[in-house]
Image (cartoon, rainbow, N blue to C red; front, side, top):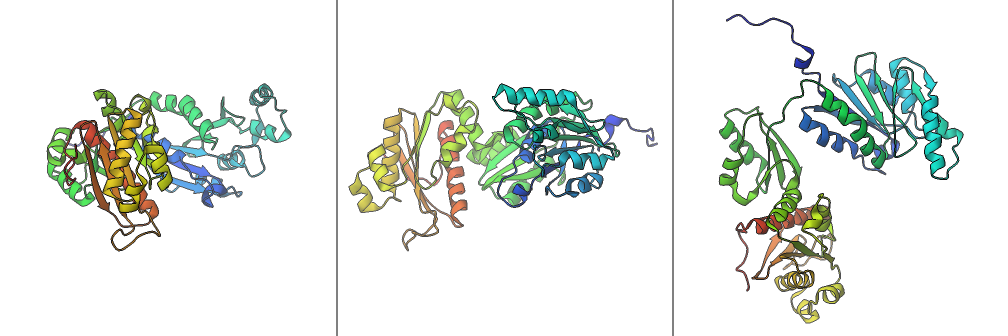
Length: 426
């Protein structure tokens, strides 16, 4: 057999869809602001076939960004920069990009007119500092920003890398990414199809990896991602589906496909089945409700919930008998069942979940150590509850409780068995 030695096309190049991501800002490096754009970029571009090769944060200091642009960690076809396009002296991304490209900055009158119009429409007088935002590296395309005063930039660097620079302000970044980068990404020929994404909860990563290999017959054809505490995603090769096999093997611990998370599946399945949900949270302080309402369309199944942190609020908001709390404690079977039943009665929902626990670092006892969490689940037919014992710091215990609570609601919505729970009380 004679190998085909004909040159590949541009679309065949593995480099074509390789992305590097740079966040600019001392506030990120110092922990004062959490960088979030890298996750958004990956979430939007990975399904189109792009590979995010590296992601880094650089300082506002002169030379920091240009050094990375001249010598990136690995070869990529595109670099996306966020931040450093504001009107102040420390917003230096324009200068840094121009330095990396070896070109001067030049004033763009059209952009300056747009900036002035944007500010005047809001009753603000443009300043000379705003004028800085109308400068661009020679040869760069200015990207319109309808949400602020910082235009974006698109430029081809001397290395052949396509560079996009967008403002770091989340509302501006998200809008400009949708307006400018997604159309560009979708216009590229040769986009690769993404393989199926399986989602699991409560299964050890090594055990899951062994099962996947046994199903597809190769150890290097899938990718495992630990999405959060106890949650795992598996991306399969294109053309391979294990949805039915995963359902049969793992039951309720298999969440489904699509990479939408346990809360996404909960909202989707509850909407499809016409069921409504509510919750009464103590130790999680609203974290469960926040995850549900992060999902677009959640209002179809979720109208509200209660954060009853103090014992007084448990009685005032949901009618829990103070004598019950005095006798058994707030972290108990009796109290979480009363909370769930109170939430069910007041909300009119089909399912009500409650949670009360000791997240620490203090408050634990020999009988109820830190990490003790009771959960209740009430319907019109029955009330059930269960006690969990977890280890870790306060944040880990609260995150674990949130993930388990969402999974319990999903399991109940699907009518699946909740293994290990006590007998229901009708």
